[in-house]
Structures are given as C-alpha cells and as structure tokens.
Image (cartoon, rainbow, N blue to C red; front, side, top):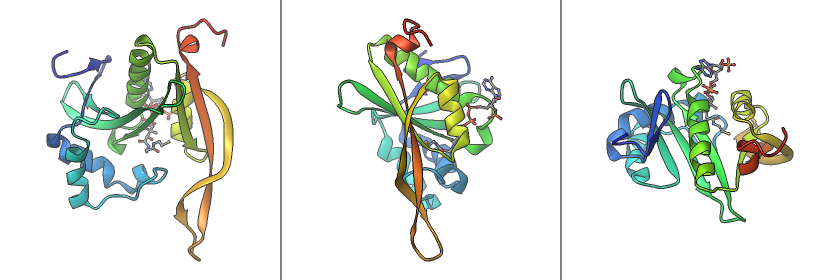
Length: 182
Ligand SMILES: CC(C)(COP(=O)(O)OP(=O)(O)OC[C@H]1O[C@@H](n2cnc3c(N)ncnc32)[C@H](O)[C@@H]1OP(=O)(O)O)[C@@H](O)C(=O)NCCC(=O)NCCS
C-alpha cells in the first residue's frame, strides 16, 4: 500500500502533492473535461499551480494508475455537513476515458466510505453529461430527481445563460451493503 490511502485493482488513491502539477494540468487545460464543470478551462500556467493548492486537501483524492505512477484523475469527496451526507464528484484525463478507471475509483471511494460508516453519498450531474450519468448508474446510485434550470456554465451569443438541468443521485450505506432490496 505504502504511498496510497487505499488501492483498487488498477488504481492507487492518495492526497494531491505539488509534484502532481504536470499530470493534473493535462486535465485542467482540457476544454472537453471542463465543459460540464463549475469552473473555466485553465490556462497552462494557472493549471500548474493547482496541484499545490490541493496539496493534502482532504476533500480530494488524486487517482494514480498503479502500473505507471501517472495521475489520471481527481475525485472530490466532501462531508456536506448535512445529516451525514457526503458528495462525490470526478474528472479524469480524457486520454484515460473508456477504461472503467473513473468507475473503479468511485467504487473504491464508496467502499471505503461506507465501510467507515458514511450514511449517504450524493452526486449531481448535468443531464447532458451522459458519460457522468452512466458512471453514476453503473456505480449503483439512484436518481432522486432533476433540478430544472439550476445552473449555467455557458452563455449564448447574446450573453444570456444557457441554463442546465441537473440530475441528483444518491446511494445509502444499506443499499451499497445489500440490505435494501434494489
Ligand atoms: C465523467 C468521466 C469521469 C467518465 O469517464 P469514463 O471513462 O467514461 O467512465 P468509466 O470509468 O465509467 O468508464 C466507462 C467506459 O469504460 C469502458 N470500460 C473499458 N474497460 C472497462 C472495465 N475494465 N471496467 C469498466 N468499464 C470499462 C466501459 O465499457 C465504458 O465505455 P462506454 O462509456 O463506451 O460504455 C469523464 O467523462 C470525465 O472526466 N468527464 C469530464 C468531467 C466531468 O464531466 N465530470 C463530472 C461532472 S458531474
């Protein structure tokens, strides 16, 4: 285990470090990755500073491909301070999409969290973000509803917000552990 907080088959999860700057910048500077994220695509010089900002931050996991040591993704996992709910989020390097790495990391975080007594995990995704919705469903999360026109990340040619509908998902500890009939 060593440098990792925990591992899955192919991945190791640990806190961010300043030395992750180059790998993390590949993710942050990609317009396609940030399209549905609540931040703009980073310029390279700003992106290189971000790993240091997240250094040791307990809300984030750096996701490392064990075989090569490369950082390929970020998982956000935060205590919402609301009746024991935690929120999960993720963004991965586009070169590593389509291999089940994000799903494996999300399941690893859930497994760990539920084993340590977390009660409920929530997630939200733009309804147009099909890759993200598929991931949430594959991870066993339940759709709880859709928030209509709840946020915007782009504006139209007149500078008007293009409003996004957001799907809300959740999973309870007892669902993960199989005591609630699915
Ligand atoms: C959301 C995101 C993390 C999903 O990445 P992803 O690689 O598609 O997700 P998964 O890890 O679930 O991989 C699933 C794909 O890998 C394939 N796959 C290949 N090998 C696999 C394996 N061993 N296990 C599971 N799936 C595997 C699956 O068939 C699936 O392909 P499909 O989507 O064509 O059906 C990624 O698109 C991303 O970073 N997006 C930008 C950031 C973002 O929008 N974040 C969410 C905001 S709410």
